[in-house]
Image 1 (cartoon, rainbow, N blue to C red):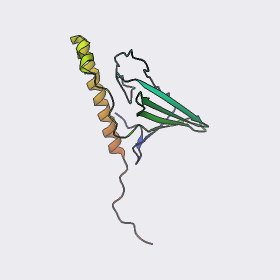
Image 2 (image 1 turned 90 degrees about the vertical axis):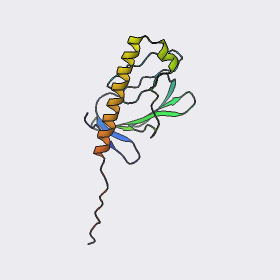
Image 3 (image 1 turned 90 degrees about the horizontal axis):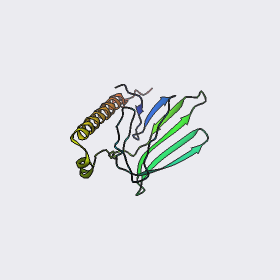
Image 4 (image 1 turned 120 degrees about the vertical axis):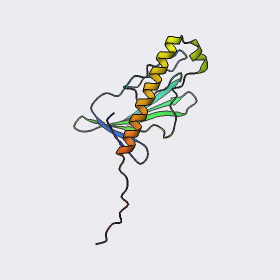
Amino acid sequence: MPVEGTNLPLGATVIDSTGPVYAVSVSGPKMYLSNLLSWIDRAAVETQLYQLVHVNKDTMTYEAFTILGELYDKFQLIKRPDGSKKFIDLAPAGLKERIELTTARLEKLSATERSKWNDRFNAYKARKMAHEEAIAKAKIKPSTKARKKK
């Protein structure tokens, strides 16, 4: 998987892009099983979220919160004069994605549905791990060489 961004010291990922950014959410109690498709960068299953969107000149900030008010996801889109955009991933560092199904939900699935879910779940986790490893390899490490004084 190619590295699409550069990891910043604060844990934010910056991506230069001209394509769309999608946000899909559920605020009510009826939730369908996620397909964990390849275009999904951050997922949540069986999680009610609400969003705040702030627009200030050329910058849009998106925040998704759980019903308990905990920040779950956040990003900024900055439109450049040439029409391209900068995507800055500001998702809370270290916050685990909510992608595990509850035991009750798993028990409601047929054996075939459970097998399909497990395949999608494992493929999603493998994509995420490969992407995180690629970003970690792309990080610029500080030089350990001492600077020469002039």
